[in-house]
Image 1 (cartoon, one colour):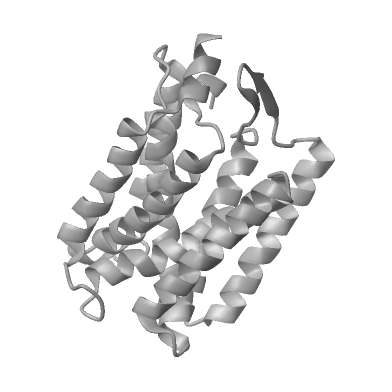
Image 2 (cartoon, rainbow, N blue to C red):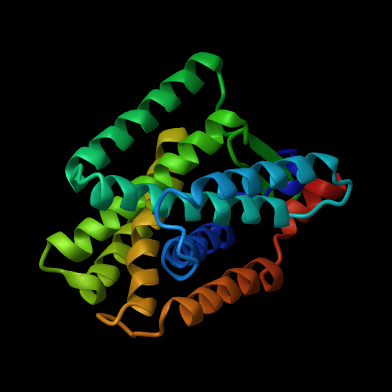
Length: 251
């Protein structure tokens, strides 16, 4: 994606990522359960939709983040189904799936390091902004792996530990906030810290989304919870304006 369509890495971005993680957890279950596509039949349509978003973004002459966030939601939806496919349908187990996904993410970061792809800072009137890594094929593969890892980790916390959905969500949100703080202030949001924070957001978003929809939580159901989390993300992106990204687009 071109820079004019991308947000900058700040509080607004991470709040949106958390909301997108909640929404993607719900949309993934919506596709597999409500639409009846299961964990496999929805992957091809989601892949085609994702490619369509990338194609439309390249053709667009209007500067907007909509393409990025739509791509994030579609990828997160697919990640939810991939995690459920591995842990439930194929019965590979949470720990094995998480280990494979961590290995994949590390491998992608090593490949990027060899290629010299790193997050790029952008100088602006109010200081030094942190921008996203290059949103190329490697970025989206790693984002898919991070979403799948976050889903598996969130489900493991909720189902295999004594924390459950409610307390587990609280603990994971705290872990996400601490990870974000450390990544931003001490890790300088280098690529490993960026992806670690994404995984933390994905994990917390999984339990939060399930907390809204599940009978073990608030019991809103998949339809209502999907609408709520979708509106939450849209509200954050639309109402919380990214002035830095807007200034970059104007420049």
